[in-house]
Length: 298
Image (cartoon, rainbow, N blue to C red; front, side):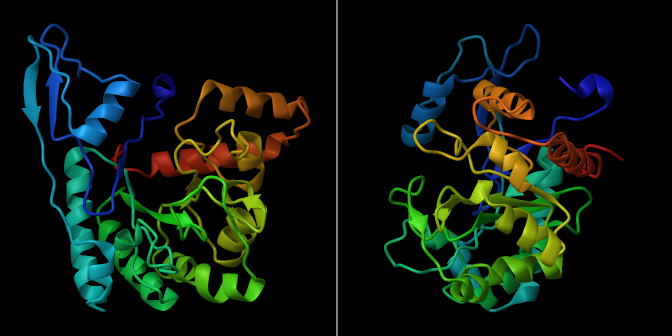
């Protein structure tokens, strides 16, 4: 929609074991467009690997490099190695036209039952921060591409992750759960942060001014964009899209019509929410700065 104003459509790709891309896709021979799956087909494809093929489709294949899981990388204690891995990933981001890699994951190993511990680095915030900083420096050595450190913050379980509230003292928060993010930001300045599904002390992380603005931007000097995890603004007690913007969480993913309506309504204080226009403008400015400094421009 904004391409007519010269604003490019930035591509994001998931991680963290390399770039997650569709290995096989088809093009419509009549116009060269890529055949796309609907929501339910995508879900079935992701869970069961089911392909929905077209008889007239032209087949294309693409592959990227797989990297070891985060825990194994961290156990090398080798920052130079992670920078090298990052440079490889940055090169592939360029090749596939991706701007933001949705990785590394750097939550603390708090409970061995956490289903995504293998993606995360360590129970030690120093190791997590140093490894994430090294990987980010490597990725961002390539022009216009960047990492998205996640999940900010205290996302230490998968059970009820959209509803759980992590109750944490200020000292534990600062010394354990935020410290890795602080190190990564100060030492490598990643292009993006992804907030988490959970609440911290009763406040959704995406709606937390203390996390998004006070800590990340004002105290640590973070200069990139902050985005939500996918579908955090659901109707079942999820975070508020308008409060995301007020908190300094710039991008609501994937962004729905109801999110947009909520943000616009909040500008005129409808439905018991209020959003100042200057906060929306600040988020838009940060988004444009990220886009115009991306690999989509020379």
